[in-house]
Structures are given as structure tokens and as C-alpha cells.
Length: 470
Image (tube, rainbow, N blue to C red; front, top):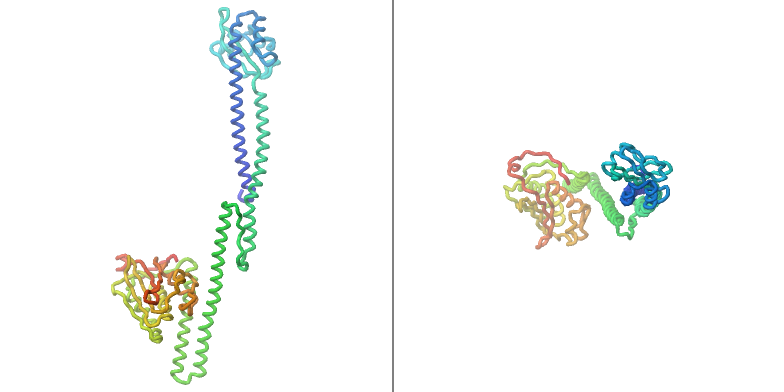
């Protein structure tokens, strides 16, 4: 059934449901009409039996005349009187003295009345009779009154129900097929439009009908999905272009510095300056490559972690030592403020990478001071990097940690919008969060909050591998 089109499946289901419904309704009507006709017939037979009971003991011609006058005339009705052993005493002419009951049935009828169906009796068609005991001339006889039953009427009703049901079912099937086609027409329109949409057809969307139903909601939801995909594609294209540009620039500078050192480096100071500049560009290349690798890992949905208990002050000291020479070269003061007993549970390499991104960002935008701090707050350990630069644009704060997002003003120099998004990914991998805000006195405060380890975990400093969902 699944290999058939939805239109045929809906039509088949609708037709089967209608067939079952019509069959049930037809059966109920047939049984109800049959029951009503039988009740009416039985009531008439009782009335006739009561009318003939008084003349059972009269001579045969009197009985025949009474039977003819008090029953339906013709070949449809009859009356008969039997002994309790089944012998005919009196009968209407239509029976030709054929007993309507067997001896066993006659004995049964002499004790209590009953109704029975009879096959054709001579010229009579199928009939229904009532046999009831009556006393006459000092003996107990059996009075039988019968008439044509409702078999033909019920057969005619059955045929009419079958024909009418078949016609109704055919109309219902055609109607269901047409309605299914009309209902699926918007789906076909959406399918054709979706087949035409590609990465090169920006702005194309699925048609939205005015039916205000589930299909309209589906089209609207799919268009929203296309909006997100197009936005993501545009960001990816921008990322590729920016990444190519960012890779090309340090490589070109590195090559230039090395060529100058080889061709024109005549003194030790000149060679030293060239090597220092080449080292800076190498650091940019290494950082960019590391960021791109982490982005690829987070795209797969997991980020491997090697968890261990880490003193916050030791972690910040490591980061400060790594970037202090850049701070000195930029005439920036790098301060650390962290309690020596504050412990967190995390991956040293990943946390150093996140803090390194924050410090690198601060080095590019600070005016005089960069503060690295750690503190405990609401069951979490917060690792802060503060600078006294121009701060984030207010409209950028809410999007600061989105991938490939960059500020358009003071803090947009350099980078491709991966640093803060990587910080957010690493924080989430540690089941924490990243935050950013502009300080009231100027500059920014960016930090990651990581849940404090349990006491048992704090005491255990053994590294434990883990895979965290990003």
C-alpha cells in the first residue's frame, strides 16, 4: 500500500470506510424493516386466529366462509383445523386438505401456540403461520392461520439497498479522489517549487495558499527553514571568503618578512625584527588553523574533552605567561586576580584555547589594562577577561557569540568572527555558558561560567576523557 500515491491511498481508505459504513447502515435497515414487518404480520395472524376461534366447531362450509371473510382473500392467506395428531378437520380451499403441520408440530401446537415459516404449500407461496390450540366439541384441536410472508419484500429491499449502496460508494470514491487531488494540489505546487530551488536561487520560496490550514502552516514553516538555510549558507560563504583572506594575509606577510631577512638582513637586530614579525604571523596562522579545526569538530555535534581538576589561578597564570610578551610589546598591563583555592573541573587545553581567544581579543582592543580574574558565583566558577577598550557596539552584544558574527565598529579589526563562538562552544561542552557585557567605566567584560566540581571530583586530579555535546 505504501508504494501507491497518497491520492490513491486516501481514496482507498475513504472508499473502504464508506463501504463499511454503508454495509452497516444497510444491514441495520434490513434487519429493522424485517423485524417490523414480521411483528406486523404476527399481530395480524393473532387477530385472525382470535376471529376464527369461535367458528372452529361449526360445519366446514361455515368455517370456510368465516375464514374467507376474516382473512385476506385469494391465494395469499389460508386457515386450517387439525387434530392433535395432524389430521385435517377443516381447511380453506387453497390448501386442498394438505396439512400445514407435521404430526409432531401438531402435538406441540396442541399444548402452546407458536409461529413458523413454511415453504410453498401447493399453489401458495412461502408463508408464515400461527398454530394455536382451541377447544371444540369436547376435544382439543389446532387452529392454523397463515399468510404470505415478507420474503419478496425483504428481497426487493435487499436488492435496492445493494444497488443504492453501490452507487453511493461509487460517488463517494469519485468524490474522495477529487477531494484528495484538490487537497494535495498545494503539496504538488510546493514540491515543484522546492525542486527548482537551489543554492543559486536566492530568495525563492514555496507558495503559501490562503486556506489557513495545516498545509499553509507547513509551507510557512518550510519557508522559515529556507530562510535559515539561506542565512547559514550566506554566512558560510562569507566565512570561506574571510578565511581565505585571513590565511592569505599572514602567509604573504610571513613570506615577505622571510625574504627580507634573507636578502637584506645585514645586522642581528634586523634579523631579530624579521623573525619576531614572522613569529607573530605564524601565531596567527596557528590560531586560525586551530579555530577552524574546532569549528569542524563542533559541526559534528561533539567536542572531545579530557577533564581534570584545575586551580583557576594556575590556569590564568598559564594564559598570562603565554601572552605577556605581546602585552609588553603593546605597552599593556596584564593583571591576574584569582583565589588560590578556587578549583574547577575542565579540559586544560580547551579552556586555555577559550581564554586565549578572549585575551587575544582584549590585546587588540585594550587601551592600557587587561585584567584576568576568577571568582565563585552561584555554584559556578567564572573566568573573566576584562579590558578598557572601546567596548562592543550595543547592537552586537546579543549576537557576540554567534558563529561568523563580527562587530562593525571599533572591535572589528582582524578576525573572522570565530573567536567568541569558539569560546561559547567550549563553555557549552563544559556544561557552562559564555557571557559578555560592556563595563560601566568603559571596555568589556567577557567570561565563561563553569559549574563547580563535586568535592570528590575536586580531590581527584586524574585526567578523565569525555565527549561533550556541543
